[in-house]
Each structure stands twice: as C-alpha cells, then as structure tokens.
Image (tube, rainbow, N blue to C red; front, side, top):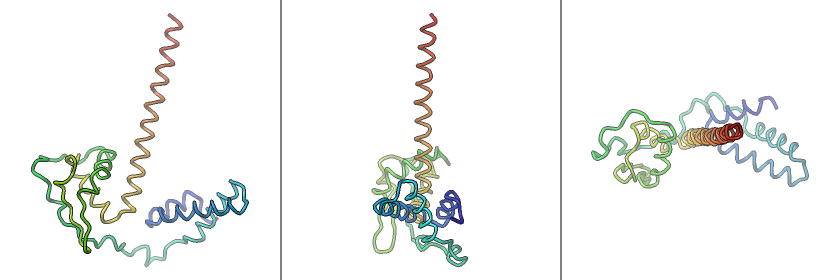
Length: 180
C-alpha cells in the first residue's frame, strides 16, 4: 500500500467517498475470507483492494462542487415563534440528535425542490447551529453522516468513561469499607 490505512481513510472522507468505500472494503474482506484467506490476510488484502479501487481524485474532480450542493432548500429560516430565541450553539451531540430525531418529519423532498417545515418538529431545535446541521444533512448528506458518526462515537466514549468512573468509585468505597 502506498498510503497508510489512516491516510487512505482520511483522504476518502475528505473526498466524500468514505461511506461507499467502506462498504466496498467490507465486501472485499468477506469475499477474501470466503476464498479461504485467514482473517488478517483478508483484512490486508481488502485494504489493498480499496486503495486500488479508490485512487485519489484528479484536481478537477476534487475541486468540483458536489451535485447535492445545488439543492434548493426553502423554509430553513422560518423558525416558529413558539420556539422563542434560540441560542447560537448547543453541544454537538444535542444538535445532531435533534436533526436525527426530526429530519424525517420536517424535510419534504419533492420534484427537485426541498422544503423544510420546522413547525412539524417534535421539539424546538436546541440552537441555531442545529438548523445549520439540518441544512448540511440536506445539501451534503455524506458530510453530515461523518459528523453524526463522530458525535455519536464521542457520546459513547463519554458514557463509557462515566461507567468506568462509577466502577472505580465502587472499588474505592469497597476498600474504605474493608478498612473501617
């Protein structure tokens, strides 16, 4: 491989091709395993096949605007009065969570135009930035998916850290109880 796995992953993410490429890699890995390769060999062969199947984009391809950017979106600025004044930002997890929970009911994609009906949301957006993430989910879905995955992973890491702290506190309490 000419690129490390990390470099290849970062390049494909930057090019907006990671979700498709990741699926290709997993399919290739499964195919190599089905052909009798060991687990480690199949993983390495799948990464090599991925690098070959997804070479770097040419300068023209890399600088071209994705087709999804030209999507017309109406209604993003029509914030319901009942929401009051939204703060500029909230936690990324709260913003992405709101988009995930409400996107299907507020976004109407028909006949080449996209309309957003914020009044249909189950609850007010946590911030104005959440409205921006909603727009990103419409205009550049793969970019939104990458951000959502990172936000979810960070949330899982935080939950795991809380769990470890609780276990550590239980251990300390047990030691203190034994000493008493």
